[in-house]
Image (cartoon, rainbow, N blue to C red; front, top):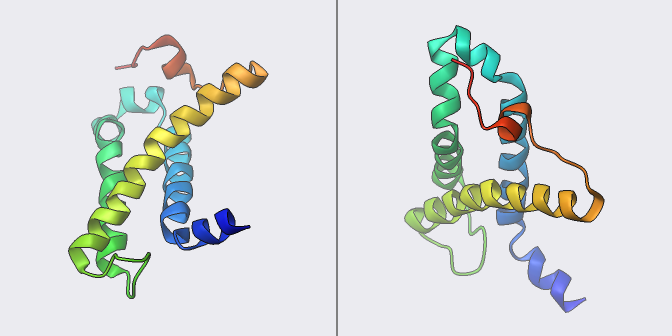
Length: 120
């Protein structure tokens, strides 16, 4: 029970990790490699999307009022806190996909991730 109470102190971090992870997966489904081959804007949107995810975290840190977690008081601390949560979301989803593949033998990778090819 103490572990759950300890995690609840960091709920903003966990929510940003989950939400940014979902946004990233939706983006991958919308901005497909085939679409990137037809549009320069979509091509570059796919290339810089990890940076965009981090900028989403920065924006959340700039607009967050109050203390998201104990010891995170100043605006710069909030920006780093939520930018870090965005970075963790990118890594956490990759770890989750690998765990699912090992445990249940289900591959969650998209076609591009499986082949390693980008359509131009």
